[in-house]
Image (cartoon, rainbow, N blue to C red; front, side, top):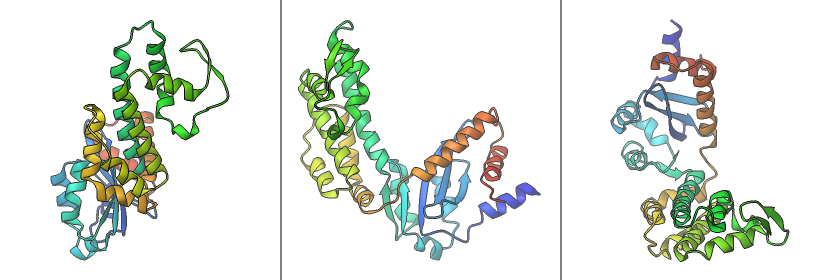
Length: 272
């Protein structure tokens, strides 16, 4: 009886809020889809699959008038989500979460750094610098220490963060250019500067590394990127919800039955 009450409350299809979050999480042995109200942070529903056919069938079950009311949906850089949304929600503005934009760029930079690192001798100062100081390359360049010296075990002497980054960039021109593109994306997204972000994409020249793929994806989804600079919404609340779901899995030692796992989540979030 409790299960029936939970599901009738959570999965009825007669109301949609104006602003939504879309995401997925690892349920039992498959990925499940989750959506939330962007403004109230209320849990909307959990679907047993993230397959586009499943999502279309679910959301098309809502009246057209409700789907027309939806004004924005925040997603990560999942192209499948981005492509199916306009067909189901005709009036929606798609917003790519800002964290995922920066994260995609820093994965490209990390890949380039690792490739350069493999070209160095393992005992060399350059190898240790690239391996041990990887977080430094991902930081906003404007926050790097340029005057105060600190000891860096990787290289065995005192220096500034800025000097160490410059040393690493001097090792390879492609790595240097990839780093500069990453910093351009980071700064533009952080400052919500759509004009600067557009300039980074338009001025980009292929480097024949992972950054090429990143820039190509960002260009394809430019309107959603532009919206990420216009709107305040981000995926933080739904990511926090996903973290709580992971805690439920950990403390419960896992669930074999997805229905029971789903019920436990609804109970945890007090949606009865």
